[in-house]
Image 1 (cartoon, one colour):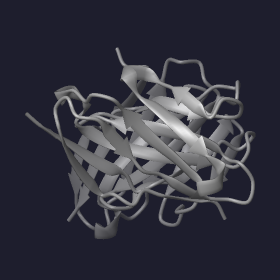
Image 2: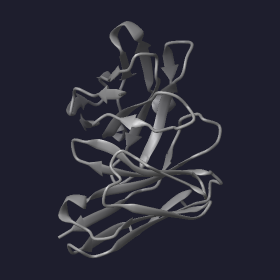
Image 3: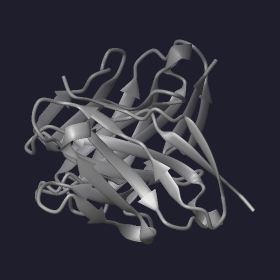
Image 4: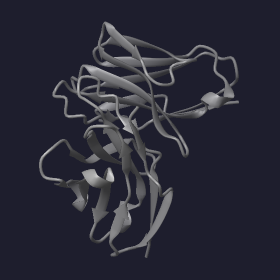
Length: 114
Length: 113
């Protein structure tokens, strides 16, 4: 069965510092990979997605993620965080389209300090 | 107005009561989903529907039922609520383009005492 692991429950970063959130997946083939963000009191919003091709994908709000097949990882990065980036971030995978049953990781809560 | 609207946004109820959470969408999507979010567990799929005549169980459907009244409406029911169903519930939609992108409502927080 497919699964996704986010090893960091909570990360604290200073405003202006760089950010990397980790995501590892377990699946025999290359899954389709996603990062979603949940701002306080809100639903989830898609940040970016990887299907195939270029392993570095750009998303909204200045985020990017890199797919590394050898490490079964899809880590999310941002060069310089802003206070508005404080939120919970979820990595998700789906094995194949047609069912669109996303499997979500447990999430990483990001706190930004001034 | 939000594209995916959930009602109620907050509800406190007692064990054994029947509860319905409603979801309506204006995105024109055929596919609708109900997820449950618990701290430390992420989101888990309860039910999903690919069109009005199609209902499918997700990974945690026990204790829940759904109704797809129309393309735009998808309701989740707890026939006899229990305390471990206390959670944040999300409705989501997706289109036929198979992009894997879900569009979420703002959530319904349910507390079962």
